[in-house]
Image 1 (cartoon, rainbow, N blue to C red):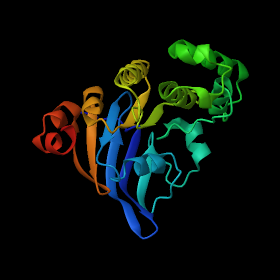
Image 2 (spheres, rainbow, N blue to C red):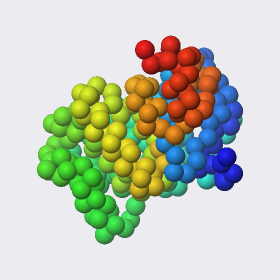
Image 3 (cartoon, rainbow, N blue to C red):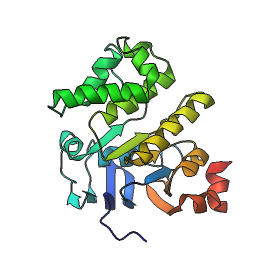
Image 4 (cartoon, rainbow, N blue to C red):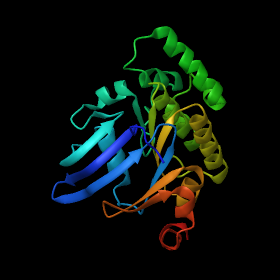
Length: 239
């Protein structure tokens, strides 16, 4: 039983897109050191949840707390400074800039030049393919390499909490396995991860706990192993 203050806590969070309620009173917690996954069908509100946490979307009702601190009204760059990084759906790399430039931009809130340089080299050790392509335009990378760059760029802010949105989207199975191996490595180094992933089976095999989101509401939550064995989850999401 977790007794410490959660690293992340959403309490009754509701978000509207125009007249559509995208999230409805969502409650969610992530403790330090966990991998927690959020699964659900397309349009369920998974990406909206991550965008709300990283303060890219306004919250209509409810509150978001990070390490016990209310961040509901913070700006996006402020939550990056606090220790939250977001690797978005679709990667969103800067295609005309080099791999190296993308990594440097990931550290835009930092001023420690020596630390930034050391972290870039660390990312090149973690992602050797990026090291080989450090001066190459990011838009010329393969899909898997672009996903690696998106994750590495997010890590350049030295986050305590990493929001990963659909890291396997559009990738070949071998590359997906490689990406999820990197996620396991990150967990081992102390990075807490909130993972949105279309491959519910793989996500639940990787995570400690999970939440099932349907039409903007959390309909089920629990240990990942229990959700993997849930008939309801199997029927709806595991095929």
